[in-house]
Length: 213
Length: 333
Ligand code: HEM
Image 1 (tube, rainbow over the protein chains, first blue to last red):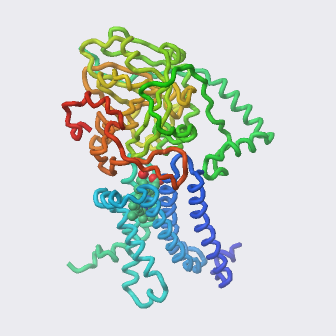
Image 2 (image 1 turned 135 degrees about the vertical axis):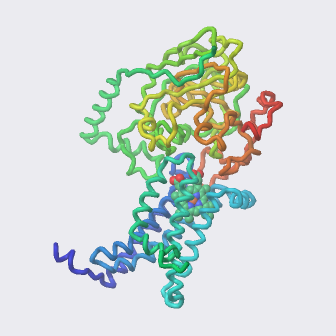
Image 3 (image 1 turned 120 degrees about the vertical axis):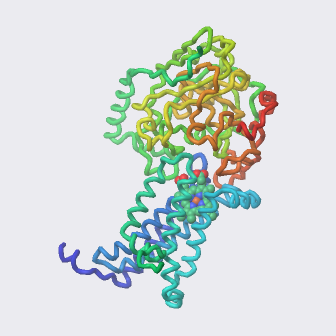
């Protein structure tokens, strides 16, 4: 047992592919199943709200898990789990896009003028949209080839995930009728995820003490 | 001197023996493997049935006697009973809309006491049976428009609040009516924890102007779909004011006090820029965080139901317009 933990475990190619297939099956399966339940009216009184909540909450959960990958890879004797990070990140995007699509097609029911005015007038929608734009940028630049081409700029761009996290939580808190509610737990989890990275974040975003005056 | 409105009446404990015996019996049955299958079937309305706990029987109300065909009833398609009783905002039991259906079965609503006092000549106290038997009951099929921009059509059973107020005889100084929900943290988990209860200050209080309260549309409801109210809908008695946003229709009422001053109201206290005292349904005055111009009608049908409809002034109850004839309704929202 000890040896198992102390010796770095390498995953074989086959293991990685199997693992990725499982992640695909589970995450797209859950999403598809939830839509199936919605279409067949098995999601309680208001399937639209149920789906908005399902996609929104799980996008955040996946974002948390994605942000957990690199610290986990550093502390566990299995660096190979890093190879799942991109995949998980893509599902954050997929769930967030479904969230927006549910909003447009089932909540607003393709009332485009209402969509336009809601985007302009509602701060929590704007905040959600900004978060989704960041996710989009990260998704389209997530290919290995692009990553190599972009060099250091890739890392700077992808650091925006921390901004995205904060925006998403702001969106979540703002969408509730009261302040004291579920999102508080999410802010706490986010703090736990961000705290170990605080020095890095400070440097990246230029708050570092070493910065020239 | 009129007394200021103070949240009060704390009902005392009562016998829960029956329920305990019942639960024990269920536990026994369950251990013998009887309950599982039937509960699974009963749960099919919920998405992922395997996660639901199978301890719970759906609430069964007592049938009521009442007259129908009120001129105030709408003919629009009704929201199914399952939806009316499983999708509730009743923060005393938690902020999720499924929480009341899950946790409100703890509420002891019989015995009950509803007191009508304050600026009245003749204070009234109604006990549980009085609530159902003092006034002749009628069915009113009303639209209910939630401030969150969804709506339902619900057949309530009840009596006009005016009947009760007339019995209490408001004094000439009475201008407002203050309402108060039961405060009983031992049975209402949201009152026990600020987190579960959404940070709301309890007991929940609401208010109406006296003329609003006396309007024939204003109903004290004791039933839904012909049976007594399930606790998640505000058993044993709740207010229904169909031309105002749902949060005005206070549930599980223990006190009605007539006052000379505008009484505090819970959501207004929590966020006065978002929820006013009047809270009349008004498509032209948006909630700061979303539009009130349209709503989604929760009826039958799943995801593809085309249920977004225009919101009407006073939720379509135009007959109340004279109550507000010289008022600026965007200022008094
Ligand atoms: C264009 C972008 C977006 C729009 C238009 C949008 C819209 C909405 C709407 C309408 C709600 C429901 C509010 C309510 O009725 O309670 C909501 C809630 C929520 N959204 Fe978004 N959203 C967007 C982006 C995002 C993103 C990117 C995420 C996460 C990655 C997210 C996560 C959530 C969460 C967690 C909730 C709360 C769900 C709950 O109350 O259980 N949203 N959003």
